[in-house]
Image 1 (cartoon, rainbow, N blue to C red):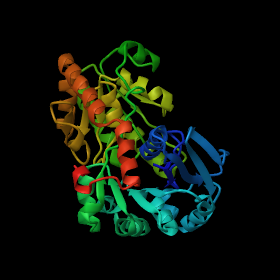
Image 2: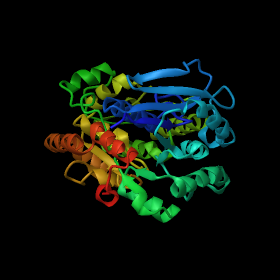
Image 3: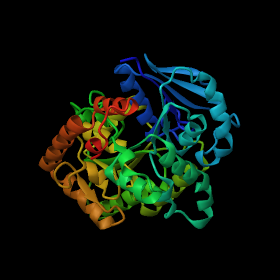
Image 4: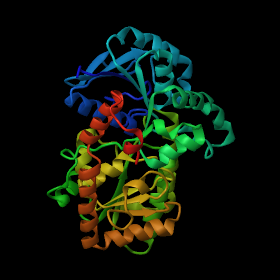
Length: 409
């Protein structure tokens, strides 16, 4: 078979961006790791992203066979993704000269869909949403809803005109069908993956706690991008409930406000909550950690918490499970398709502070149960969520070597 060449479009999210930079999060990690593992399977990948004027090179390798190409688009500074629509036609024009021998256009998020639609010709178009505007719209105040008009228009066009849509979960597949009217026969469920070599159980949890300046006490922690939907305020309130009951646990969060007014506002809000709850030194707020430190931070945890009000999937949850750390996760969204409640993790309604606090306390006080859930979580990731398997599924989608209903699960 001739070598496949894939052009990925991810205007707002640089796959080689550093976690902590504005709007560099799980989607960027997903695209980087997918490109890397596709390249290892012989697929040539170029991921096109926006040059924000930060002095990064126009072309940078992810690995042999996969690279990022940064294109000038709009102002030479960070622009929130909701404000990118006026510049996306320019991005498509900049990308077009580089699309010589690519066989497949793979767009990511709505801004990538906009670009792929502009460039669509006889090439196969695969689209991954990562999140859906119509799903988020109901939770937004009226004054913010107009920002989603262009996004929903691009998502609708991708549903109608792309050849294949990739959903991370069955719930996302259902949303695409019910909210956007997409024929379910063209939707493939392909979960993200985890590097199970890099993310693996630690040898010495106590040493890792010392590495991050954390006390030896039992630790429940979370990590992620600052966004009110992530529910970190709910985590803080559950922590306060446990500490007021006399439990001597430690709680930690690694998250930071990038140069983004929304993240700065969320940071200020959460800092106010921390002060209001008087958590003292039992709560530690760590700076955004470099990617190379993330496995060690997971390894330092006794329990990982994902308290999102809604979570489409949650790669950080898989990373923690791969490290053998028991997970307490939201039951709203994709986590319920990954975790079997009580068998390889716990699912809770994070807005029920008593339930969240109760789940955390039950795990923190039961070492045997933590160990059992951690082992089963690791085994599930190894069996079902490897990047090798995800990349292979994408290769099949790119070359149309699949049976649609057989792979949707």
